[in-house]
Figure 1 (spheres, rainbow, N blue to C red):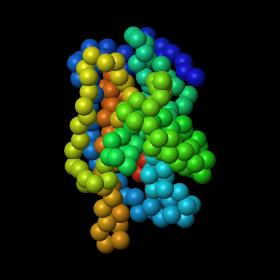
Figure 2: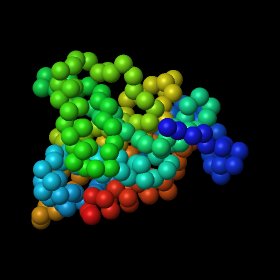
Figure 3: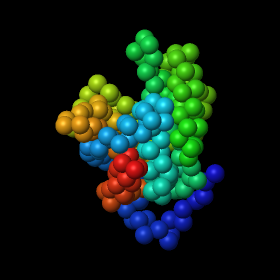
Figure 4: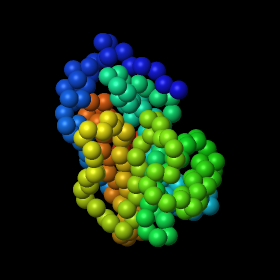
Length: 208
């Protein structure tokens, strides 16, 4: 479900119209988060660490309203729930785009994720479903690279306003585990302040 945002009363209307006209309206930041507690919690729950940090990411996304905004035509819509389209690696080292529905219950979510990963293994190519909704984040993991910056392949002519969130390799030093996180968002929908809210929320969830 979604509702239209009233642009005429939105205090960011001018910002939206300004950035919407740009060929590249996305901006991105990269930071590092502590995942020591999250890794331990995932093990204690018996769920994969990937499922765990994807769940915390989606929880933060659904908490910060600006991350639920999407541009549809000339309008901004606010979705009630955001799910994830994550890139899932196959045994032959190709990947496919998944569709993982968010659930507040981590155990239920982990099972949904497990089934979707298994489904991707039986497919070929990039697009593994006939349709993908607008209420998504584009999610990826690069567990081989401790990156300090990140960029995405994008078609400037393709209408896209979905946030893109990527996690890097887990590093450990003196018993502390950390991961790089990249966040790319449409500047017409949010600013650095909102990305900061998301990062802070994600850190709290990962450390709770």
